[in-house]
Amino acid sequence: MRILQRLLTLVLYVIVLAAGPRPYANAQSTIQTEQPDGTLRRLHAPILMYHYVSELPPDADNLRRGLTVTPQQLRQHLEFMRSRHYAGVSLYEIYLALSQGHQLPPNPVAITFDDGYFDHLTNVLPALRDTGFIGTFFIITEYADNLRPGYLTWDQVNQIAAAGMEIASHSKTHVDLQTANHDSLVYEILGSIESIQANIG
Image (cartoon, rainbow, N blue to C red):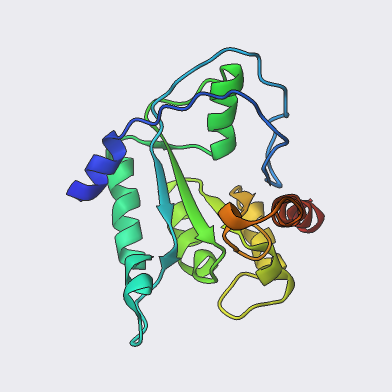
């Protein structure tokens, strides 16, 4: 818990200089996209990033161990934040706060889940619902397109979106974007956003 306490005391200083289209879709969102108003702002909003939320498989390597928390650990983290009166916000709400002065609740925290693993439906969504937090789920869209084992299908992503969670792009194929050329970047970034829009609405 000490590590989580330290994470929650980190200050995120972000200056929005420019903004593109809305990066994700949420089936129940009522927030409208607007242009930045040109004001530079900074705010305190910890962002927690999770990957696997499951028990470790017997053959787990160092990477898997480093990217995994158990369902019990996630619930402990969420209960800790709830006991300290943190309020879950979406990344889009943080964007609106920085770009337009949107009012965030006291003690905002964004909770994110990378890669679109199946355990995000079975282990993460119930924990978020039980504790009253929202999460942002970053989906590798080609994995959902191809029904890759161990990852969410589009039907399952829709279940998460219908529960009020944010669905975001994590590229088409999870390649290293730092080494990609322009055409690859367009495919990976814009293509994944279009896939989410087509499948989530």
